[in-house]
Length: 258
Image (cartoon, rainbow, N blue to C red):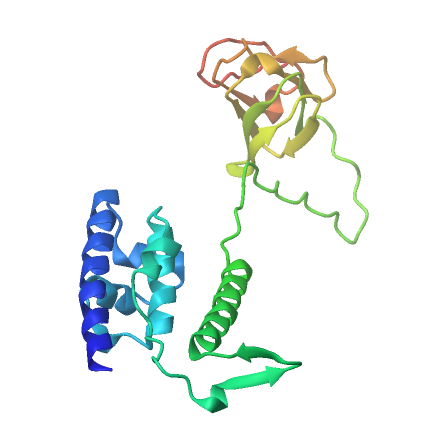
Protein backbone atom coordinates (compact mmCIF):
# COMPACT_ATOMS: atom_id res chain seq x y z
CA UNK A 1 0.00 0.00 0.00
CA UNK A 2 1.50 3.38 -1.00
CA UNK A 3 0.21 5.18 2.08
CA UNK A 4 1.71 2.48 4.32
CA UNK A 5 5.12 2.77 2.59
CA UNK A 6 5.09 6.52 3.10
CA UNK A 7 4.19 6.07 6.75
CA UNK A 8 6.96 3.50 7.21
CA UNK A 9 9.53 5.80 5.55
CA UNK A 10 8.58 8.72 7.81
CA UNK A 11 8.69 6.63 10.99
CA UNK A 12 11.94 4.95 9.95
CA UNK A 13 13.56 8.37 9.43
CA UNK A 14 12.54 9.42 12.96
CA UNK A 15 13.63 6.14 14.54
CA UNK A 16 16.92 6.00 12.59
CA UNK A 17 17.91 9.56 13.58
CA UNK A 18 17.02 8.81 17.22
CA UNK A 19 19.12 5.61 17.30
CA UNK A 20 22.06 7.26 15.52
CA UNK A 21 22.11 10.15 18.04
CA UNK A 22 22.00 7.66 20.91
CA UNK A 23 24.82 5.58 19.39
CA UNK A 24 27.05 8.63 18.91
CA UNK A 25 26.29 9.76 22.45
CA UNK A 26 27.55 6.40 23.75
CA UNK A 27 30.61 6.53 21.47
CA UNK A 28 29.82 3.20 19.78
CA UNK A 29 30.49 2.25 16.16
CA UNK A 30 28.17 0.32 13.87
CA UNK A 31 30.78 -2.44 13.75
CA UNK A 32 30.66 -2.82 17.54
CA UNK A 33 26.86 -2.90 17.54
CA UNK A 34 26.81 -5.47 14.74
CA UNK A 35 28.98 -7.78 16.85
CA UNK A 36 26.76 -7.17 19.88
CA UNK A 37 23.37 -7.61 18.19
CA UNK A 38 24.29 -10.28 15.60
CA UNK A 39 22.72 -7.99 12.96
CA UNK A 40 24.70 -7.12 9.82
CA UNK A 41 26.32 -3.70 9.84
CA UNK A 42 24.64 -2.83 6.51
CA UNK A 43 21.20 -3.42 8.08
CA UNK A 44 22.01 -1.14 11.04
CA UNK A 45 23.28 1.55 8.65
CA UNK A 46 20.09 1.27 6.56
CA UNK A 47 17.98 1.77 9.69
CA UNK A 48 19.94 4.88 10.68
CA UNK A 49 19.76 6.31 7.13
CA UNK A 50 16.07 5.38 6.69
CA UNK A 51 16.95 3.36 3.56
CA UNK A 52 13.72 1.41 3.39
CA UNK A 53 14.69 -0.18 0.07
CA UNK A 54 17.79 -1.74 1.65
CA UNK A 55 15.81 -3.39 4.46
CA UNK A 56 13.93 -6.70 4.48
CA UNK A 57 10.18 -7.09 5.04
CA UNK A 58 8.71 -4.71 7.65
CA UNK A 59 8.17 -7.41 10.26
CA UNK A 60 11.88 -8.34 10.12
CA UNK A 61 12.91 -4.67 10.09
CA UNK A 62 10.87 -4.15 13.22
CA UNK A 63 12.78 -6.98 14.94
CA UNK A 64 16.13 -5.48 13.91
CA UNK A 65 15.07 -2.08 15.27
CA UNK A 66 14.24 -3.70 18.59
CA UNK A 67 17.64 -5.41 18.87
CA UNK A 68 19.37 -2.16 17.81
CA UNK A 69 17.56 -0.17 20.53
CA UNK A 70 18.11 -2.83 23.22
CA UNK A 71 21.87 -2.77 22.53
CA UNK A 72 21.84 1.01 23.14
CA UNK A 73 20.17 0.59 26.54
CA UNK A 74 16.73 1.69 25.30
CA UNK A 75 13.29 0.06 25.51
CA UNK A 76 13.59 -1.83 22.25
CA UNK A 77 10.02 -3.08 22.32
CA UNK A 78 8.58 0.44 22.51
CA UNK A 79 10.95 1.83 19.87
CA UNK A 80 10.19 -1.01 17.44
CA UNK A 81 6.43 -0.66 17.99
CA UNK A 82 6.59 2.84 16.46
CA UNK A 83 7.51 1.31 13.09
CA UNK A 84 4.31 0.18 11.27
CA UNK A 85 4.33 -3.21 9.63
CA UNK A 86 0.86 -3.50 8.06
CA UNK A 87 -2.68 -2.06 8.10
CA UNK A 88 -5.68 -4.26 8.76
CA UNK A 89 -8.31 -4.09 5.98
CA UNK A 90 -11.63 -2.47 6.80
CA UNK A 91 -13.63 -5.44 5.54
CA UNK A 92 -12.88 -9.06 6.30
CA UNK A 93 -13.44 -11.71 3.67
CA UNK A 94 -15.75 -14.59 4.56
CA UNK A 95 -12.85 -17.04 4.13
CA UNK A 96 -10.95 -15.36 7.00
CA UNK A 97 -13.64 -16.31 9.52
CA UNK A 98 -14.09 -19.80 10.94
CA UNK A 99 -17.08 -20.70 13.07
CA UNK A 100 -16.47 -23.22 15.81
CA UNK A 101 -19.10 -24.35 18.27
CA UNK A 102 -21.28 -21.31 17.57
CA UNK A 103 -18.46 -18.87 18.52
CA UNK A 104 -16.80 -16.72 15.84
CA UNK A 105 -13.03 -16.99 15.79
CA UNK A 106 -11.13 -14.95 13.23
CA UNK A 107 -7.53 -15.42 12.17
CA UNK A 108 -6.10 -12.17 10.82
CA UNK A 109 -2.86 -11.56 8.90
CA UNK A 110 -1.57 -9.59 11.87
CA UNK A 111 -1.75 -12.71 14.01
CA UNK A 112 0.27 -14.67 11.47
CA UNK A 113 2.95 -11.97 11.37
CA UNK A 114 3.16 -11.83 15.17
CA UNK A 115 3.49 -15.61 15.41
CA UNK A 116 6.16 -15.61 12.71
CA UNK A 117 8.03 -12.76 14.39
CA UNK A 118 7.94 -14.62 17.73
CA UNK A 119 9.45 -17.71 16.07
CA UNK A 120 12.19 -15.62 14.42
CA UNK A 121 12.99 -13.83 17.70
CA UNK A 122 13.20 -17.17 19.53
CA UNK A 123 15.57 -18.58 16.90
CA UNK A 124 17.79 -15.48 17.00
CA UNK A 125 17.91 -15.58 20.81
CA UNK A 126 18.89 -19.25 20.71
CA UNK A 127 21.71 -18.57 18.26
CA UNK A 128 22.91 -15.63 20.37
CA UNK A 129 23.03 -17.92 23.42
CA UNK A 130 24.93 -20.66 21.58
CA UNK A 131 27.51 -18.29 20.13
CA UNK A 132 27.91 -16.00 23.15
CA UNK A 133 31.57 -15.24 24.02
CA UNK A 134 33.02 -17.34 26.79
CA UNK A 135 34.86 -15.58 29.60
CA UNK A 136 38.23 -16.99 30.29
CA UNK A 137 40.45 -16.28 33.23
CA UNK A 138 44.15 -17.02 32.98
CA UNK A 139 46.06 -16.45 36.19
CA UNK A 140 48.66 -19.12 35.86
CA UNK A 141 50.97 -20.59 33.28
CA UNK A 142 51.42 -24.33 33.12
CA UNK A 143 54.85 -25.21 34.46
CA UNK A 144 57.19 -26.84 31.99
CA UNK A 145 57.27 -30.61 32.31
CA UNK A 146 60.20 -32.13 34.15
CA UNK A 147 62.51 -33.91 31.69
CA UNK A 148 61.99 -37.67 31.78
CA UNK A 149 64.78 -40.00 32.68
CA UNK A 150 66.80 -41.63 29.90
CA UNK A 151 66.08 -45.18 28.90
CA UNK A 152 69.41 -46.30 30.38
CA UNK A 153 69.42 -46.01 34.20
CA UNK A 154 71.77 -43.30 35.42
CA UNK A 155 72.91 -42.54 38.96
CA UNK A 156 70.86 -39.93 40.89
CA UNK A 157 72.40 -36.47 40.61
CA UNK A 158 74.36 -35.37 43.65
CA UNK A 159 73.95 -31.89 45.19
CA UNK A 160 77.15 -30.85 43.42
CA UNK A 161 75.62 -31.58 39.99
CA UNK A 162 72.23 -29.81 40.37
CA UNK A 163 70.61 -27.12 42.46
CA UNK A 164 67.13 -27.83 43.83
CA UNK A 165 64.95 -25.09 45.29
CA UNK A 166 61.79 -25.81 47.25
CA UNK A 167 59.24 -23.02 47.91
CA UNK A 168 56.55 -22.91 50.60
CA UNK A 169 53.90 -20.15 50.63
CA UNK A 170 52.16 -18.76 53.71
CA UNK A 171 50.10 -16.33 51.60
CA UNK A 172 49.20 -16.00 47.94
CA UNK A 173 52.08 -14.59 45.88
CA UNK A 174 53.09 -14.06 42.27
CA UNK A 175 56.15 -16.09 41.26
CA UNK A 176 58.44 -16.48 38.26
CA UNK A 177 61.01 -19.27 38.20
CA UNK A 178 63.86 -19.38 35.67
CA UNK A 179 66.00 -22.51 35.33
CA UNK A 180 69.19 -22.38 33.23
CA UNK A 181 67.95 -19.31 31.34
CA UNK A 182 64.44 -20.65 30.62
CA UNK A 183 61.25 -19.58 32.43
CA UNK A 184 59.67 -22.77 33.74
CA UNK A 185 56.90 -21.19 35.78
CA UNK A 186 55.07 -17.85 35.96
CA UNK A 187 51.84 -17.33 37.85
CA UNK A 188 50.12 -16.97 41.22
CA UNK A 189 50.47 -19.69 43.87
CA UNK A 190 48.00 -19.85 46.73
CA UNK A 191 48.65 -20.04 50.47
CA UNK A 192 49.85 -23.47 51.66
CA UNK A 193 51.33 -24.43 48.28
CA UNK A 194 54.71 -26.17 48.11
CA UNK A 195 56.61 -26.49 44.82
CA UNK A 196 60.16 -27.45 43.85
CA UNK A 197 62.37 -26.92 40.78
CA UNK A 198 65.85 -28.07 39.71
CA UNK A 199 68.52 -26.58 37.48
CA UNK A 200 71.87 -27.82 36.17
CA UNK A 201 73.66 -24.48 36.49
CA UNK A 202 71.54 -21.78 38.09
CA UNK A 203 67.98 -21.14 39.21
CA UNK A 204 66.39 -17.67 39.67
CA UNK A 205 63.24 -17.01 41.74
CA UNK A 206 61.31 -13.73 41.47
CA UNK A 207 58.30 -12.87 43.64
CA UNK A 208 56.02 -9.92 44.29
CA UNK A 209 55.43 -10.86 47.97
CA UNK A 210 58.79 -11.99 49.42
CA UNK A 211 57.54 -12.28 53.03
CA UNK A 212 55.00 -14.92 52.01
CA UNK A 213 57.59 -17.15 50.29
CA UNK A 214 60.01 -19.40 52.17
CA UNK A 215 62.81 -21.09 50.25
CA UNK A 216 64.85 -24.23 50.91
CA UNK A 217 67.95 -25.02 48.82
CA UNK A 218 68.94 -28.68 48.37
CA UNK A 219 66.75 -29.79 51.31
CA UNK A 220 68.20 -27.11 53.60
CA UNK A 221 66.17 -25.18 56.18
CA UNK A 222 63.39 -22.87 54.96
CA UNK A 223 64.12 -19.15 55.07
CA UNK A 224 61.89 -16.22 54.00
CA UNK A 225 62.85 -14.45 50.78
CA UNK A 226 62.16 -10.99 52.27
CA UNK A 227 59.42 -8.79 53.71
CA UNK A 228 55.68 -8.98 53.05
CA UNK A 229 54.74 -7.11 49.88
CA UNK A 230 58.37 -6.77 48.79
CA UNK A 231 59.41 -7.49 45.20
CA UNK A 232 62.52 -9.68 45.36
CA UNK A 233 64.74 -11.78 43.09
CA UNK A 234 67.11 -14.54 44.25
CA UNK A 235 69.67 -16.48 42.24
CA UNK A 236 70.94 -19.94 43.23
CA UNK A 237 74.00 -21.52 41.57
CA UNK A 238 75.01 -25.17 41.56
CA UNK A 239 78.44 -24.35 43.01
CA UNK A 240 76.85 -22.27 45.77
CA UNK A 241 73.71 -24.25 46.55
CA UNK A 242 74.54 -25.65 50.00
CA UNK A 243 73.61 -22.48 51.95
CA UNK A 244 71.41 -19.44 51.44
CA UNK A 245 71.31 -15.96 53.02
CA UNK A 246 67.95 -14.05 53.06
CA UNK A 247 67.93 -10.47 51.79
CA UNK A 248 65.32 -7.70 51.46
CA UNK A 249 66.88 -6.06 48.39
CA UNK A 250 65.39 -6.47 44.92
CA UNK A 251 68.75 -7.36 43.35
CA UNK A 252 69.52 -11.07 42.67
CA UNK A 253 71.07 -12.85 45.66
CA UNK A 254 73.85 -15.45 45.36
CA UNK A 255 74.27 -18.01 48.11
CA UNK A 256 77.67 -18.87 49.53
CA UNK A 257 78.99 -22.41 49.40
CA UNK A 258 80.43 -24.13 52.47
